Image: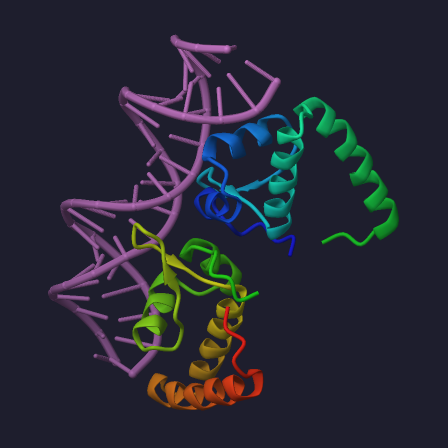
Length: 87
Length: 87
DNA sequence: CGTGTAAGGAATTCTGACACG
DNA sequence: CGTGTAAGGAATTCTGACACG
C-alpha cells in the first residue's frame, strides 16, 4: 500500500526508529510523507519498509547523500517499469 | 491489511464519515479499533471498508443491532474458513 | 554526520453530556 | 436511534535550536 495514512507515532512503532530519525531521513530527502491539513506527517506501508531499509544501510556505513543518489536511480527505474500508472 | 495503524482523522477522510459516526459504530460493537498507549483509536484498512459497509446498510434502513447480529455470523463463518491462523 | 533532548506551541483525539426526533 | 455540537482536558506532533563527536 502506498496510501499515506500513518502518523509518525505509528511509524515509530512499526520501524523501531525514533521520531528524530524519521524526521531526519525526510529532511535528507529519503522519504516523502504527505502532510495533513494541520501539518502532521502521513506515511504509507511502503514508507515504513523504506525507512527500515534506510536505517539498515546507515548501520552498514552508508551516508544519507549516498542513499539519496541510489534511491533516485531506483525510483526512476521503477517509474520506467511501472509506466504512467499514476494514482 | 488488518494492521491497526490509522487514527480517526485518516479514517474520517477515507470513509467520508464524521468522527461521531465512527465512534458510534464502535460503541455499537460494529468495529473494533485498537488503542494507542494514550488512548487514541487505531483502525485498519479492513475497518475502513467495514465502516463504509455499515454506513451503507444504515442508509438502507438497517439498525445497528441488526448489523451486529449479521456481523457476528459473518465473523464466525470467516473464522471457521480461515482456521487458526492468528496474527 | 546522525542523533538526543528540552521548549513552547498548535493540531488531534478523547469522554460525557445535552439536543432532536 | 443515529447524529450534531460545545466543553475541557490529555496525548500527539511540529519546528528550531543547542549538543556531541
